[in-house]
Length: 550
Ligand code: NOJ
Image (cartoon, rainbow, N blue to C red; front, side):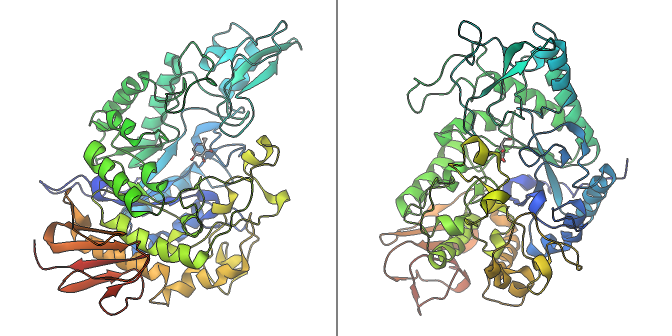
């Protein structure tokens, strides 16, 4: 095993833990940078871009799954949790990446996918071969079907990707057999977390990666692992009532065990949970200090671009959860926020069945303001690759190139999430915009020609670019120690304006008003998301000010 490099230093006494104020950059591995020229992003590509991430000013990287996988869901279908898929590199490459990131002071969070594995995982093959009633099948959710001949699924649950959540297998003797549960694609059988062997295996997997120096895990669908064992029908449940596969009480004991495990390692390693539960306050029990360290704030991501809604979600977060729910605007599953914020319905985060018009100029202006808002709030933030370049959702990917399993599972009704996963443009003048090595490569999804002007090298030279704003904002935030203090105070402001102060005389003002509004008195303009109109703040613009008080 390679030396993982030393973990970045622990906080000084009295300082908050690193994850409390960290800015974490999500790398969707397939689409970040391609080191070997096969058109797919890989570990070599990430290694070559580590200096870019350091210069951007982030504290940590979250990498989407790199494990061996048949890629039915872009790697969220894992066949071997202890090895790297050859598409992405080798275990030696992964160890080198961890060490190099640590040398640059960047922490590494990896994805762990415990709700389901791949149908090509040896456990699933063994379960199919062993037949009904076998110990091998108890690692999954195999059940006889309903109907006279078992021809109907065991219950009415639907896959998150469309269609039934059950698939019937053919038994080893050739007869139509049991059904197995998959809350996602059929290639992603759900694991049964009531089985002690499943628990032991994942504890071992966590140790395997902690021993290699990772600084934490993003837990995929952290709210789905435990199911109501009665597997009751769910269609009749009113909205807002917990589904029998989500947010079950048994999850807390599971995460307490994981927390004890991770705490036994030195170096402030962390869990970040992916839990799409609402209301947001349902995150609270997971974040009491004995389970997860943090969980994504999807309430913020899904909030419309409206002052009241934003203020509500900020108040709910800080009042009922605390700063442990990192602010997040985009990720690899939702419509990029430049596109969202350019629409009439700014809260629409999921792929639509039809295209919805967007104004990218407006969306970009709002995205710039949203960045200053999110980075000024108490707590940590997660950025999604390419948002620092102002990339928009690509909505015209040719049908035959769509790779997201959602497309097939919805009979081509929903095009899926590929539009936010288009490979990044690095160099304006290079083939494939420099996604691959200099000799060029054809990226696995086509990039819009207009991304030439959004390429990282083009923006690096432009002080008004989105990239320049991200760099300046992260620098200014770091200069204030990540705005480490947890308190913020709302300031009186005009209608449509959000204004709040933080310790040390720092003030953030975001205008969602339709007319320019006066800036509050200040000593220094630290940063503006766009041009000001003298002492007036134009609509959809944000500023950071230093007021000299506090
Ligand atoms: C959430 C991941 O972010 C998404 O990309 C994936 O498809 C599902 N979980 C299933 O693993």
